[in-house]
Image (cartoon, rainbow, N blue to C red; front, top):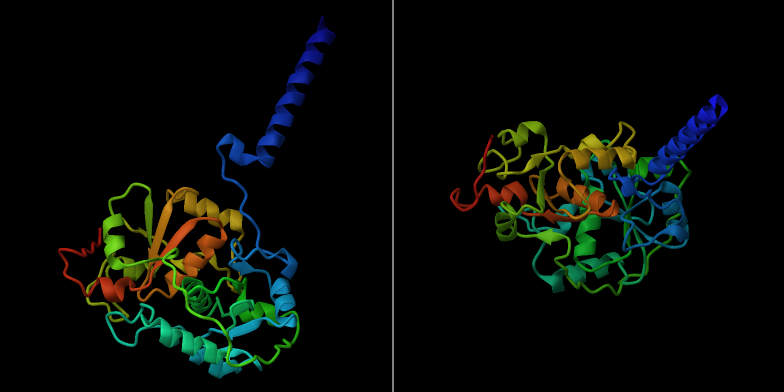
Length: 318
């Protein structure tokens, strides 16, 4: 009898251990957080509908095969280290409206944008690698990638760790571009919202709104020319750089998803983010789409929202 009891106990322990292992391997089946999809590590592995962020090795392979390279860093950073030979120097302002309060919004004239982008050498079928400096910049690479995708260019990626990470693998050999390119703007609203839509989404249960500015901005400070201080009612504060390590590379994706889950985000959530002029939130939107979420950027952001009538476009510091 004692041997039968021990045998039964061993069997139960074995079943429990096997179940625990199965749960750890397939957490989504047991109500846990599914493991985040990792970014593509080779050019062949890239799926452009899914992959917005790729690893430096994959980016180098794309570049060696003739991909267009855009240096999206601000002019201050470009002036310090110089521009990579044969890369395109492009800043977010080049594709955005020039004056407040709509400075964050994209230029409305599609013909003008087409002419500008063709003049840079962008082609409809050529992959584009956008490089930034995540540790020292403002998310400009993500903003440019979001912009180009919104304008209808599909094969656009940014690099985890940006230009510093890719240069650690050696000097870049960027091929000269054929100018003009043949890309024609075909704008989509798949990843963009306007102020009226954001206003209407405030009370919607399935919408999660993120304010990705610094905590001081969320709390009401106006260091960058906003007309009013505060945040959109119901918006959750989440500084975008909390997801970037000191070396400029992303934190582990599973850790990022845990933070998002703690803020009430699920894969079914409709996510809208904003900042001051849609640059930091453009980067955040790029990250979220790469992780498989349904995310949109409000490019007008606080510059535009805070300039509207307070009764229709409220802000709060609570």
